[in-house]
Image 1: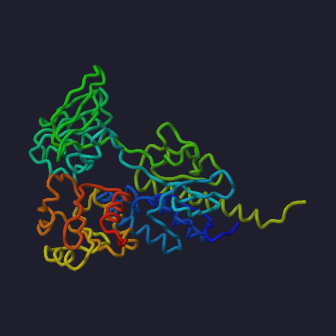
Image 2: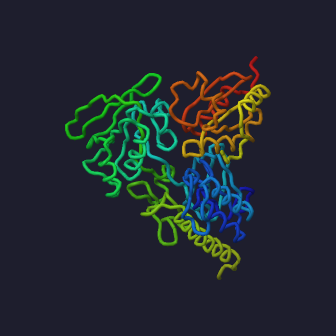
Image 3: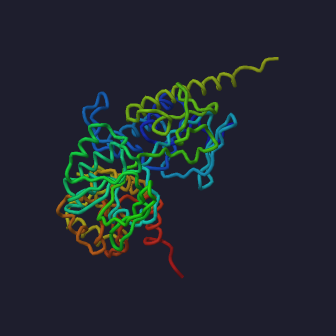
Length: 319
Length: 118
């Protein structure tokens, strides 16, 4: 099957895992297409400075992603961004990806690298007051809250470290966390607990945000008593972790209970010819370097799979 | 410094020139942070599709960006980037904080439509 839209391999996602896979596949002279819905570079572009990428003393995530993208294109990899995937066909030997505009691309192998995104609370008022009191980035928006009273939602390292960092600006920081203990490292917990500007509301969740032009208050529900209190606040910073962008893969490949793609040591999924790499896979450590490593393994495994397929096609059928 | 691939507005004079010489203008005023970078990326990707719109960025911490920070339309904004859409030099829309590609496209399609109404 050879149509204009047929490739040896299609990579879904253009973060460090996807771009690395694109580099390796296209350098192996395999016709490769990267399809990307979000920003090229994924979560990597959001990192102000990367100082632990071996061989590069210091670089911004934005610049590193630009270099990776250029490298992939230089080897002949095609990259299409701003697309929206409406359908996937994974079970046949030829895999298909259908876009929302009706375009269909097919390939012998697929590498899934959709990455992840910040988790939101998903409560009433959250979207309405985003940028008007609700933020997901302390370094970006902290200075808007100078001498103001704010809430930080979450109990992991990011939440507690950012709560401490926000005390440079805010007069009072209240950490709201759903459990009776924190998931953060001990040093982060100690630093937050010893900061006189920080107080804690445990075993509680935000259920709604209120305001007019700006955020003015939030309803906080105690998970033990069920009591809801309206809490006056000028701002709310939300740091409740990341979710993998794998909604479109439900029922297509095996995911774990957190929606992460389950892969073996060759980054192969449960579907033959379908591989996965990067932050959307089930693993403990998520770094640019681990994504690059995953992308490399997935690309090499996919290359081997594709070359085996090509060899089989060339061999005459046994009588 | 903003190291994006967008055209940069570095002064109030640059800003005045851009909005007076172009019918449809989008200016993203931000920093190189996680809320701003995706919006720059979206604008870079949409430049080819929306050739009738001029896309610019401006550094939030540049004192010259007062031309954006003092707009009445951004009163109440508490999250960067401040993204301003100008039609014939007038502000027609302003958003605060990160936006999705769909949200940006919806504004561009509504405010800078090329369709001539009968």
